[in-house]
Image (cartoon, rainbow, N blue to C red; front, side, top):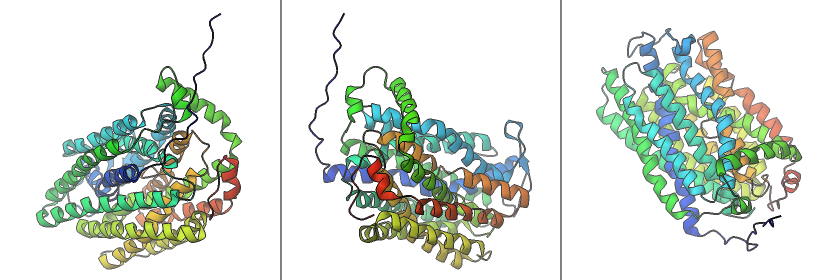
Length: 463
């Protein structure tokens, strides 16, 4: 009988991350945030809704549209198509992202996975240049590819975080990444603001539609170009499982995911935190994703007003992410996230009461969002890194990403259903409150220090 050789793993711990490596990691947030801000937050909702309304037989520039489209024979209100599309993309990511994470954990070439997902998403975004006239189905298909690829790249990107710093460093590392992302997304948005201001015409809605389309395309170009930097500066840090893996990484990834799903019940507190995150972050992502649609359709605000507000959010979120990161060093990430959820509840209540055709109150509300947005997300990401068993970062972040960075699904689904039943965007917005209230209660019930220890990790000094 042939002797079985067991692969050995080098017991030497990996070297500490360098400033260059961490800077490369931060810069991927700079690269992909253009998609989140320019595409998801500002332009795609109104753009794709307008294209869908054209397909429904409504006139370009009409104040309202009661038309319907019939994708795959399903009767859908034109105003509900985009929220439903977001929900569909998340339904698909439920199957895709955990597999991508398992493959990342089994691969010695995570940077290739990061680049492949990022460039695929960027290419689909650039292809939005062909969404003209009433081609709402093409726009929907490209969005699905771009958003799923965006999520897949984030899964791989987040899996680097536990390897870049110890328990007491990750809140700061995560917060700096989010902060730099807001600067990058804000800079491109500023450039698009200049273009919209200079070239739009009040009596030419087609020009506005074209400017929105090319702004979306610019985000794809930005995303692809700046992804080159982290691909060069990041180091490959394969897990022990990747070092001993043999055979096909794809099939091994599926097998590993199956084992993790069977074993995950051994970490019930990690799952409980993940449930809390999926609930409250669904509300955050829905508010971000549908803000521009709410502003244009319900509040009847100009596109330039929306862009200025989102730009304000971006730059204030830079300071907000760093400020909440500093607060977390004093009172802990868990308490800071709970505080941010209380503030988010106030934001939704205030948004419901906003008057129509009043830009100033909308901008003030945007400033409030900016102060809590970055910190709540950055600290959730670093807090979750403490709850992941060593060597399974990609898999667990695959589950995490199901409701992160534009991949919420219950919120848009609730919003779309309420709108279809009531034709009121305000009532749709009220449905978001339940996500923040329930998410707060669930997160408050997590014994966070015990959860970190149960995952085999060392808790930070302050939680």
